[in-house]
Image: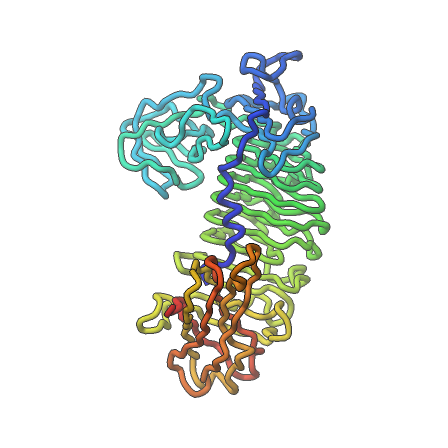
Length: 541
């Protein structure tokens, strides 16, 4: 049960590897300058606003570098966009990660660094690093802009608190350095904070992507009170936000919102603060996916605030995937569920974790996957649809019942009366494992055990409980199709609690990924539990 979706993870690995067209143009923006005729082609002739870059036709791959430690807070209007990037060459707005204005500094003290910690300890008292500045550890980032790959300072972090001999970040450090004696680079020392700031929290303006595809925004601080979000996306796709701070006014403002039609949005290492709705949609006419990674969502206890909102019970988009993220201080709810919600090592820290009633029952197949939810290996699958599936845990990892010689954990299966073999909406996928294999014939065994013999009146048929493998099935066709082969055995649950195996033998005709899955589709019997366990470690022979 620990592996749910793999295509999405492939998408997420591309956060840092955008190719850059050699014919694209680099522009420079300095909010602190006053220049009405500058061409933006050098730091000395930089534009003074984002509008100068976004509201003029640009070529896919063009990039605008924005000077850190500056703010655009006066004469602000809605920021409009007029151009499209491509999936290979997005249009880019990026804070300076390369010391282009020569205003970065090195820390006087050295620091003790450790992966997965949020606090660095200084070698002596320090006062030079302040809250709001961004820093990175020397060795994590080269300060030379690479014209072919945008991969600057992946491990820069925003300082959340400071003490005399330590600094702490909003997010845990995941860089490549460890140990004592490390110098930090400060990305522009200023009381404004390092990220260039656009607008103020009480300013009624927003970024408006409307029919503007493939944009990467990196290292900005975007604020506002607009009722449709700091950033609004309409009928646009392919947007990525990295190291971005979204700040609301604590009363009426959403953060990052989709208002209509198609979308695919990536969010990484970003922070949302003081919004009514931090991220999601505010419309029913939407379809697409959110992929969130390494980010923090803080509702600041705003009345009725929501971390992720699906906008409407009639919203028809399909996937919200969050990894290594935090939701906290939301007075309403951390996450409103949509058709499929997957949380991997994501902490829901508010009083109400997710919506389990009301308008949510409008979804037919509202699935909630929780992987490493409370601790490593703490996994759940829930459905939040109508009837007895409301707030029902369907699958849950456990170490209480395990097979001798098997895996360290088992999957506890808890069927409901809505489980059925009629169609895929209510079948329960017990597990899915991608296995890279060659054309050798192999037998796959998966072991099952019933809770007790009295938990069953009739055993599940082989059409109600089976394992299957899906593999490449044509030895000459380069665009081969896949074949699914199912097990045919039947387990004796009402006569034995011993571990019993279902087996399937598969012979791929091409080397590649084989998917091994388990399915359950028997409707819960009256007056008995029908619970059982699955050994999470298959045996391959």
